[in-house]
Amino acid sequence: MQGALKSRITTIATSSNAEIESTGVTWGIESTAEPQTLRLQRHNRGRTGWGLVSLLALVGCSGGCGRAGNPSHSAQALPTERPAERPAAQAQAQAQVEGSSELEVSVRPDVNERFLDPALNVQEFVEVFETESREIALLREELADSLQLQAGERVADLGAGTGLFMDPLCDRVGTSGLVWALEISTAFVEHLEQRANEHKLDMLRPRLVSERSVDLEPNSVDAVFVCDTYHHFEYPASVLSSLRDALRPGGRLVIVDFERDPGSSRAWVLRHVRCGKAQTRAEVEAAGFVFDAEVTIEGLTENYVLRFRNPQ
Ligand SMILES: C[S@@+](CC[C@H](N)C(=O)[O-])C[C@H]1O[C@@H](n2cnc3c(N)ncnc32)[C@H](O)[C@@H]1O
Image 1 (cartoon, protein in one colour):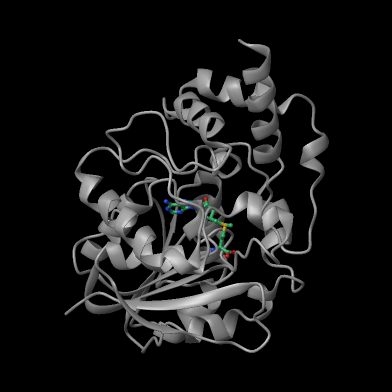
Image 2 (cartoon, protein in one colour):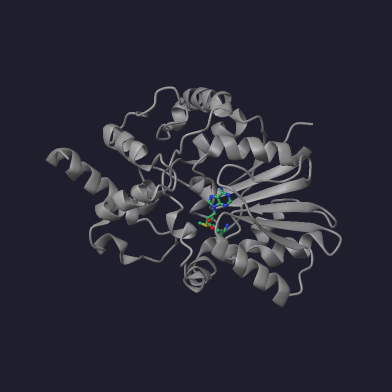
């Protein structure tokens, strides 16, 4: 490999491996040995087959262009958010949705690698996700309220993680309702099953799903909750399309994710979170959802809450 190219891959791989999801918790991944080697090994394991292509695309684009690699895939890389140019972002997101009959290319290769690791230490993530120093954990009841759930409704928590929202969601829909806790991580699904049994939550249904689809029956849920997970979607157009199928007409979709402002966000957020609020909204609208409201919650400073509806 050419020296300059290798050095750029090293830089990207180093910063990618430094990304650990946590508010107020810093993990020393950056100092781990040879992240570039890890990245290339991952590709050799052949999890997606697109890892190296996408990595090279990133190398080609690290100066700020939007895409590289296979030009026939409009979902190759979405632009960095520029709120003032929302129509452009929307047009690009629309192109991505229109192209979603083809196999969508990952917009953020390997972002979920640690969650997909069968040796994942769930307890470590319980401590990271459920600590009260994480504003999302502190405000989980208020966040659950943003879904406007009624007793007896069916809600899906997409990217349920360790089950932070398990109790608030089950409380709201009650024993006549249903809570799907959807995860791509086998370790988290096992953990959620265990918690559901321990807490005797019969309405909780943990389920392993693919990275491209929520794998639910058409019109089978009244609401979907996506907390700190939108930026983890490798295939946002495909997931959003499957979400629209699963959500009944008029059903709610609530997305909670990090504010991302190049002028003020922490370096970790800028590196780890693919896009900010305006682009998220543009992508979700491009997938056919109708924007309903931005929900403001006192004390929520690092994250925004957007609510959408599936058109009637
Ligand atoms: C940062 S965690 C957030 C967990 C939880 N929502 C919370 O806020 O505590 C993101 C989670 O999304 C999951 N995830 C990523 N992509 C997903 C997808 N396409 N479908 C379902 N889960 C996904 C990951 O496995 C991970 O557990």
